[in-house]
Amino acid sequence: DAKTTQPPSMDCAEGRAANLPCNHSTISGNEYVYWYRQIHSQGPQYIIHGLKNNETNEMASLIITEDRKSSTLILPHATLRDTAVYYCIVRVAHRMEYGNKLVFGAGTILRVKS
Amino acid sequence: DAGITQSPRYKITETGRQVTLMCHQTWSHSYMFWYRQDLGHGLRLIYYSAAADITDKGEVPDGYVVSRSKTENFPLTLESATRSQTSVYFCASSGAATPYEQYFGPGTRLTVT
Image 1 (cartoon, rainbow over the protein chains, first blue to last red):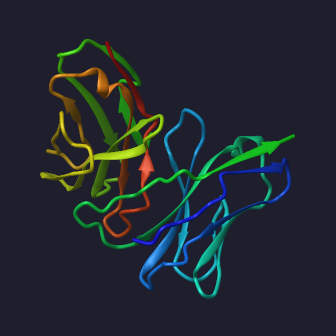
Image 2: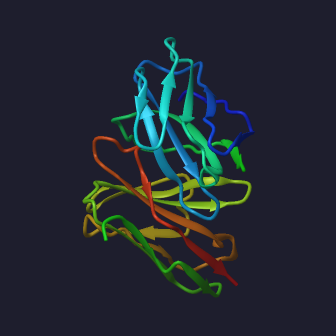
């Protein structure tokens, strides 16, 4: 499984875009990049996932580099409620095999400040 | 309301007691999961189920039992609770085509005294 590397923490001003990077240099051709976040005392929340094209939904945008070795999650207008730990996970999207599972690493602590 | 719910939200029990945590989802998702979250260990998968009557172990299954007789329910039972099972337990579900697009419940905070 491809490993991911994220910065331990980042700060962002309220109302500005938050850009969270993730390195996954050993990603395989059939592995997707998933992003989750966990707000304090809540369950993890799925945000978005993608293979190679940029993706956007109501929560965020996902930009994946052409070589797929890194990606960036963009929260376009961060609010105080976006303060959370953000996790970048790489997985084959359509296959759940024995022992295979979501692995939540240390993630990036995003602090949105007013 | 649609979504995934867990009950109880908080539970205190004594060592040796049996306790069951409930999980219910209204999306008819094929997959359901139980995780525990502890400081210093992050989220760890206990059991998962690909469909009704199909369950499989995760990375920390010892001391836990699951069943899934109906698609929407996935109870987790601690047969004889131990202090090491004090944790926050999260249930999650996902569709068959996208098993890693998981939707989590609010969690159950379990304390074993």
